[in-house]
Image (tube, rainbow, N blue to C red; front, side, top):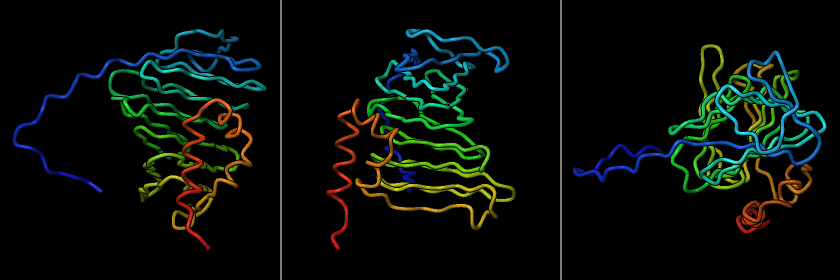
Length: 219
């Protein structure tokens, strides 16, 4: 839904504060690169900038943003920070799975891209999983809404996911068959090992999953 109405007198918006990001290694090791060619072992506490690439093997990592948001990388995950400023955080996921907890007070656009798919959120929790070999990307909304835009040859599809909804995009299929939406229950989400790992760290995630049970239709 779009609201195009404007007040005759608009209150000046507070100027957004530039985002800063800091890396924390949760377990295992994480590698960092400025160009995608030369990699070195990253250290906890390192400040990250646009253009930085990160990859995990057996490790897991957390990126803490200055606005209170965070992004966690699962094992065998690779990302690149394409944009990090007062307007937006834009992260490209080449492979693997990430957990996004976006501050409800953030002033920046939070955008995740992967396999011709763009996911945009504001004040929400969601996960994104990318499998480049199978050409599949999964997005699961856990709190509030997530906006997904899939750009394919000759067509662009836009969808809004509500909490508990999962979108699977299979780019190996024809555009009309490539998108599949499913509703997930709290019980199904609790079988996700990466989500469980995050659940141990985020009370807000637990509340979001509990709310899915409260909203589930009775049978």
